[in-house]
Length: 337
Image 1 (cartoon, rainbow, N blue to C red):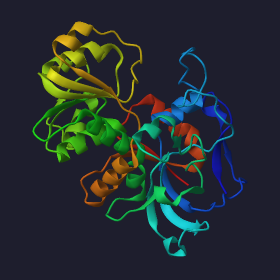
Image 2: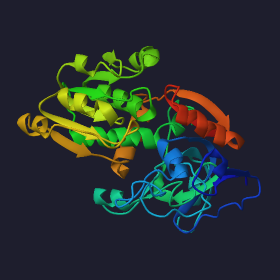
Image 3: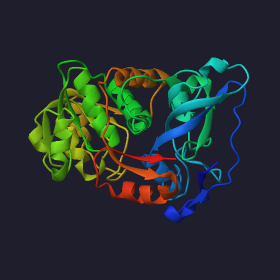
């Protein structure tokens, strides 16, 4: 089959397009999917770069688990397609199903998310013509979304779903969303609106109209967080220098939830703001199987649709990752084998 292999940590030249990779064979309890579309995520770029570090050495080159990474690897966590083969123990009636793949591969409760396998990281992913996954991770999907629109959902929307669950966002509350033009941010806006919340979104000026079209009630420039007024929840994927202003935007008893730090992971804060205003700070990462099932349900009834900024052929994955790193787009980038 055709696939793109990550051969080492490094730049885009660490990605190698091949047309002679052996077809994967589904093991017992697995299905094989003919990939129609696979979306890009920050994890793809950061893993390629080895940007996660370790607790002892922030500059160490590691994968998202902050440990050594096994090469070569086919990346690509966000996959949709049709089941074309099944392993022992899986009904052959599933062949032909249109499915969306839950990229989190773990057993047990939510504590297992800390050590979960992630498709395209601990096992080969969807930047290929074919991929195998546990049968339970392949969810049948209906609705009117295209393959590219479906592929945009798994990591971004499941991450957003878990963030808002961790923050306990309720109908009638307000939430400030950073990075609202990206995949997770766009999903946060739409899921929060579906839950009956008022959404204040933060994005670059050139992207305000697109973010407003996704349902945000108010859209602010990155340096105008103070204009948000007091909000109940801050859902942050940016961090960096804006962190003190984000804490300052929280009402007493407000909740701050973070699932990314694209502007920088090391921040300064006045802890007096936290304890005097009785704030709650929460970390969040990826999402549970239940979170993913909610994403599939929202997508099926048309309540969640992330914009697809561009599509690339599989052979141009390196160019797609370079475009992704530039951040000059709204929504998601998708590869189509």
